[in-house]
Image (tube, rainbow, N blue to C red; front, side, top):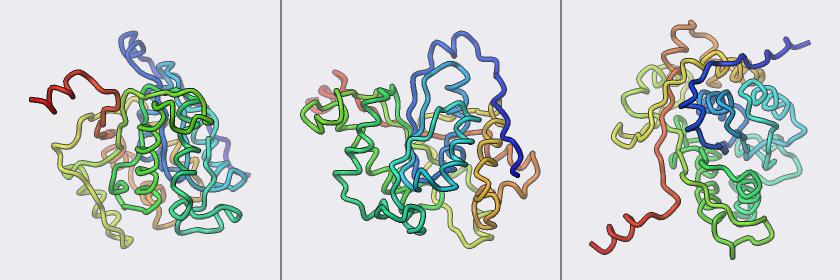
Length: 272
């Protein structure tokens, strides 16, 4: 029998932080991406009482990885899994009756995700960056594409009217890594034959210290038990490090913000 998954411990949050945190919907490709890339921010928002949820592009809702995802989201306080249920690009049996996410009709995938956005009505959406994060997995890249399209279309009432009333999030945040941060990870992933992708430091618009929520983040990563058992997977690699080594890698999260809602300044920039 697997060890019971711990309930999230309450983390003290100031009244100012509590009042300022917007609702957050994270969209990631695979179960475990949410914990690795944004687990600290998800736990931080949930601990402050902000509405928080996660949509996952791949793996069937009746798979073992869906059960692991449910445990991870409970630890982070991010609600129940919301799964599009497509197959992983490299593991067709992850969803035997569905196409690979990368092969599915784009319009249909956008509509499915847009329905979640309109139903949840988040202030901000978080997803992979344009090159697919550290390893550039094709499902990460495609999740970025689909999310960007869905976020922009969600606020236009004439698009996908069957998916609910329009809703425009305030911003889209891309989970990423600056060049200055990936030295240790590059070495670790290089040992298992993987390269590392990053962005210039100047493209980072939000650097978040998530050390107060690090225990929750790490517990959520460990909840993805099948990935911890795969030697080349990042959860497994991290599990072989000391606690201090993991802290150096996991205690900070980086994001690039893309504004969604137009402002008067946008027009001045075009007409100046």
